Image 1 (cartoon, one colour):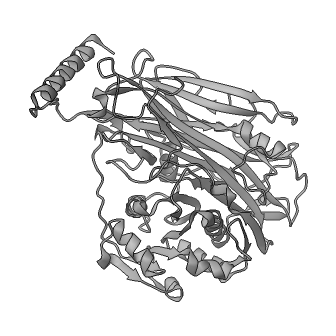
Image 2 (tube, rainbow, N blue to C red; image 1 turned 180 degrees about the vertical axis):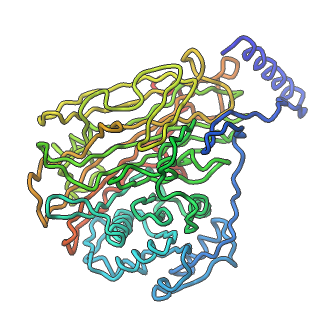
Amino acid sequence: MSMQSTSRRWLVATVSIIAVVLGLVFVLHVVNKLSVRVTNVNGQEGPVTVNTPAPASINIPIYVVGPTTLVQKLINAGINQSLIKPATINQLPNLPNNSIIVIDWSVLGPSIVINGSSSKSEVNLASPVIGLLGTLFKHGDLIILYGSRSELVTMEFVLTYSWAREFNITIAFGSEKYYPVPAFIMPISSNMTAIMAFVKPGHGRYLIIRPIYVDNITMAVVTWHELGSGLAILPQSYSGDDVSLENTNPCWAYYEYGVPSGFIFIWGGSLVTGNNPTWGIPAYTDSLGDEFYYDSCLLIYDQVSTAYSPARIASIAYGMVAYSLSQSGYVWAYVYQEIAGYDLYSSYTEFAYGLNPYVPIDYPVNSFYANSGTNIIQPTPTSPSFTISLPPSVSITYPNVCVGVDNTYGTTPYPGNYAYNFTWIFTPGTGCVGSDTPATYIYGFSTGLPGYPAFVSIPGYSTPSSSAQISFFLPFYAEVSLKPETITPWPPIPLCIWADAYWLVTLTATSTNSVSLSNASFNVPGSSGQYISGTSSNTCGS
């Protein structure tokens, strides 16, 4: 920190002490409204006010299928009762396009789950429920399924399978075709929760899906509306001039401008917060208004290549980590480092040894995520800025940051299939020492490069099979590390915040009529009311 900055904080602390001793109310800090300079989606520079609240109200009807207890939960979440419209299953296909639909799983479950229990479910993929949900996706609806935590894996599978079948989203393996069925497993603590899902207007190959707390349903609706709802205001694909962005979530940029031909886009899903919908998942907010974000999305090619041994599917995993330091928080602490990454080695060891307790035993992982070397990532170690590419036409620059990359382990028995635990370390500010300026510090990264993608390695299948179920597990993690200011060594906020999440993606043969699922896959520890795994009063690693 600079001498001028330290002097300012010493004055603030002195005034604070006097205020406490005298029992008077002083104005401790008077500053002009601070802003950071970023480049907007049109490539124009403009100010972004730090921590400006987003509108929390909505004025759109919400159709609810379920008991009165679900209606009451929505009212408790801040939704105006006059907007809640009870409906029946039979009415859903005839509702207006671009509707918001909330369904209690107790209504759908008995029609699709065979011999379900608290630990295991067998799903009837020929059930009319699949066609119903597919119709809602086609109508551009926001679909929210509500149920118990033990039912989440089944709800998410049913939603994504319905999406893939409705839009005929398949991955070809020789003469066989498979529906991709992704699940983004996040830290979540509530026993009763929900799954939200929708597709990009007019483009079924773009899926947004993620678990949410019921209290965040209003934010889910605002997000869906901000990202276009069914209005088709966003380009289905972008074929114009190259686009240069700054300080932007790469997952949002892909949603906005389009992915390369042949790829399927699956997004763990942003929630609108602040005045910018591109910062990712608002995972944690402290008592001073500082916010921690992360995000993850996958590009998966629609063909299995047998030109390699083992066979593989091209893919790129993009991610984002961010922290918004408020005008109240920067008096106490500064942003030291943001750390995030993809653990390909755990993807491999789960395939090889079944070591991860969060992967359900009835959902065998028989593939793993890999790449072809330590440099097939972006960014690589650099300073004082970096740029990542999003083919076919977008680049994003992140200024004033030093980047370090750790990669551990990496070897597998399969030549050219490397499984590194890639960890990006972003240190903001001049001189690689952190930053105390109130702003949102956002950084993107990817495993795999344009033209040199990562891939899903499939050792178990050298030839296609109509009965095959191919699945892989890809851990994602993010954390922020703060350090206290010298004159305020005991800040009232956590100095370390972290989240462990993962993708569990299954390719289910189009001819398959049922699948057995274990509900263990949502046993990811969460912190109450937040999308994080934990916090600490100490700087990360100390």
